[in-house]
Image (cartoon, rainbow, N blue to C red; front, top):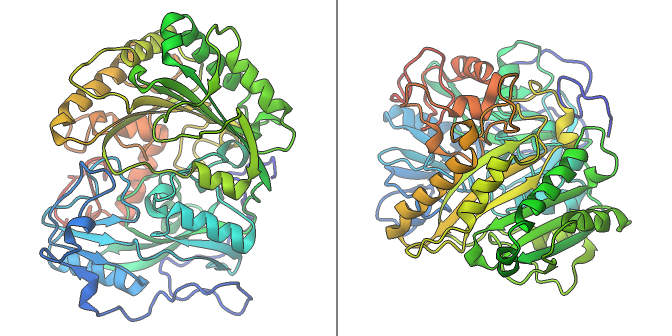
Length: 560
């Protein structure tokens, strides 16, 4: 991969051709491996594509993966073609209904749920292939309804390439990619959006829907240039209905084989040796602080997740993927994690945050696709709450104390065995991109944290929400209870939150001064607002944490 990171991303192509705003036909006349569905084909008139109350599919299709989220939409429209997507948006507008869009259904908050409105379900649009983009260049295309498993298997088996996306197999490409997209190859290959070259979107201007194709090489400052950039980390549900994403022909080649490692430290031993817990967190933070720069040559090929579970779970687990045959650096990493601890690491003895690798040894080599399948767990359908943080320094003493206090806290009325903070390694090639080149501004962090709690009984909702909220506030007590943005006056090592792990506790569009625009987007928020004002000034596409039109009223009806 080139070390020269241009303003247009990791794999930029020189030269720009005049770009039209509307997508008419795809370039033809050059050989392509697969045809892209024609954007102007007739809409499917079958009544079975509109799911109304009373239909046996209605309940299942009106709720998300998180069982907390369900609603009573006027209808759910299943979309199979581009023309149907345009018709579905125009149909909702014609009835004065708010449209929301679902691809995989994994949104952490209720941004898709839409009582009284219209849900556009893209889950039948699962195509993955290779063709010519709007400039006639070979590119890979992925439809918004494709699951990450669809994406990985098709790209690997047909073309021996991949995108550095997430590990949960059933997540839909539609929301995952426009939020940035990261996963176990991000340190080696950057974010998913660093490879994006085009996005095809149903947009609404002047009260009518049309298909717009926005490309990375559209003229600087053009309307479509702003629309493309907004989809490189601006989050879902803000600008239109994504139909498909296009990726550069030079996508990464997956490694033939990888090493997977799974080790654990029993809570029973950690509680007897309380100095081991801060030492473990220091080992992890200090290692990645030293090995996560954009020019890292060895450990860019290592990705690791430290799952700090509540003590009732039984063990803390460390999962690692190493993509080289030489196992020496992996073993050095595992020794560095154990350094100074009295508690000895063992093989994993219980699940941690939905992931359990019952290996009889502490590491095992396997083909990359097999390892991807092994790690590809979305977990059971349950009720859940999530929070997030970026860290650009090792943990402070206050961070460690807060994590320890809440993971060892007794709460007899609440089952906390599925409560944890997951610490993902980050950085390396992800940090080789300028913070303003894409809409993802966090480009010097080396740890990405996700706070999680799961349960099944609705009666336990408030207890779990209160627990995770208190947990988060104490960990970040030094910075006002949230992972504040690092700057010249505040540099305790935190750098905001991840838009794809939305958390309404960070404020909503109804609040006079919400925190989420700053914590998700930092300095990039004004440009996202500009894109919103160009492409969705009437605020057709909105939810509780939308990008807002600067100075305008938000959350209104589709008419404006």
